[in-house]
Amino acid sequence: MIGKRIWGALLAAVFAATPAAATDFTFVPFSNVSGWNQDSQRQALRVFSASCRSIRSTPEIPASDWQDVCARARSNFGSAQRFFERNFAPVRITHGNSVLFTAYFEPVLDGSRMRTEIFRYPLYGVPPDLPRGQVWKSRAELETSYLQGRGLELVWLDDPVDAFFVHVQGSSRFNLTDGSTMRLGFAGRNGHRYRSVGRQMMELGLLRGSASIAEIREWVRLHPGAGEMALQLNPSFIFFQELQIDDDKGPIGALQHPLTAMRSIAVDPGYTPLGAPVWIAMAGGAASINQLMVAQDTGSAINGAQRADIYFGSGVAAGEAAGRIHYSGQMLTLVPRATALRLTGRAN
Image (cartoon, helix red, strand yellow):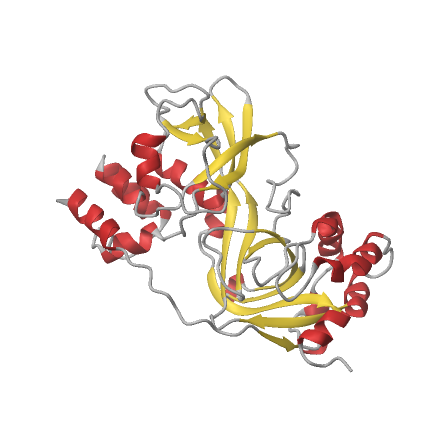
């Protein structure tokens, strides 16, 4: 019965189109940026300088607009705060959606390069027939038949929920059974939009009270078979590649640069240029954040102009802290000054 309910929900899912809204750009002076003078922007400047040559365009902000400030960033030896104030202007980019901050981390898990009786849940490399930029086969289709027997398995895990959340986080470190280590990073996706498994399980009455990772893990453990079908309520599927990264560096983000804990964020690149400095003012009580970060990553669940996923680091403690982040606040993109004046209608 549970299995029928889950598959029924999958078949009945309808993605409703929403009316298009205009993108708005609002100038915000540094004097109105709460907490700006209390942050130490030196680390943010280092992170920005390291990846600014890879900065990406958005429809309204071409990458060429960043060339001059990028060159100045790499040769700046003075005050980081003064550098940002002289070269940038904060801009609030909105497109009809509310502000939402979440967080992610790099899991550190046990794994095996070979399937065993214990390690039997795989993460896959990219199939040679994966179409780029198109919606392809769903998670259910890929896991139940299409990928099996093709030799694409990179590592095997001992828990289906761990394997699922590596897809959500986009990267992971592994301590392997042979004593070696491995790091995997994002290499491709099937094109389906991310859908929250926890939210859908609550709507189906499978979870009561919360949709935490712990609750999902316990439900899947108690319902073998049906539990793995529940995880397939999210049709999005990620493919991985093995990476050679120094242990002291973070995972590789969408800009192909290592992420820095509490200074790197994932954004929607349709609105926020990848590589841009972004001021995060998160209203989270004791967990509040007022800090300059850099847009260096993307995620299938990160959609909208006022949407950011904060990278918290690697390991269990980072994962526990990241899992508690679900707050509103204010998100300002630091745009080269001339570009900001043009976008906000302040240019002469």
